[in-house]
Length: 427
Image (cartoon, rainbow, N blue to C red; front, side, top):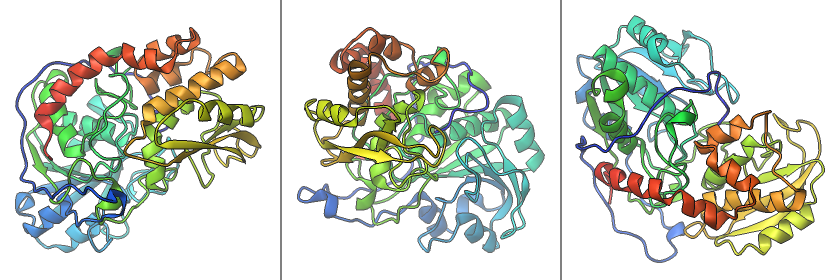
């Protein structure tokens, strides 16, 4: 996540009904040494390919994709589909970091013709509304396909690109196909405040919590029923191609699929598991270890008492996590090239680990040690956009403890969980 070029757009939440349910399978839950058990999950793309691309035959296809969009042979799906004479791949659309992944956080690749396929690639990072409509219309497509590996956090921008392109295709009368991939941090835990529409932005378009516990197909169904009609005047014609072999309790290393970093600072599954909590520090003047071997697992600043912070975190009683005193030199963004001192977050029991609670506790103990959280920016808006509300910042500044803060957002989270039930596709 990197704060976008344009900060805010409107939105809201509504109780809503039906959902397009794709065909999917299930496997038995592992009960012993689950982190060591690997299954053969078949992605939505492989299901599409097994069906000989039937839903795309005779269509002019656009593809929203990035380096995670691969088949079982690890070849990019754009290359695979382009080589299939029955798929008319007309255009490719690149999200944050670009279609081929060459751009850093907060940027993308410029419009260009892809050398592998000869297909035109359009930059749609942080593009929405009429401008996005014009780009998609100019491409000449009649069917959009989305296939990107998400990491399960609201502020990871790929799901905002999903939302924006769905809304545009609804307005333009273009069909939309979502190819599902696993939620890598499992689809069980849901947490964090539900986004307040006043704080909607490219790192949170609509009213979902920080850790949503959904796959992109499930999110697409929820978006299409609850939000897209409000901003586009109608739902998009949505087709979900679901996975087989995935169950909600699986972490990514149990799927049998190879981990491909979804972005440069998401190198490992451990990073993704911690990210819904440690990304909160992107709203402070502290480093999250960008450019180190442990992004979002190293947290620190140049003048922190790392030993005291570690000791306070060890006393917090958090489940499934340990903390180590660390010194590191960030290679990007905050404190680039300097020497920071802080803590390393080490996940010891991921089923018990609560990333959001851990992030809040890290902020709370830092506040108590230093006399206040060093918010980024004059009005701390970055943190508020990350959290989807300004309430958490005010609560921390007032000395409220994590348990009380978490309790304060439960009514909204309970409402979201009731809505979410309607769009769950996997057991």
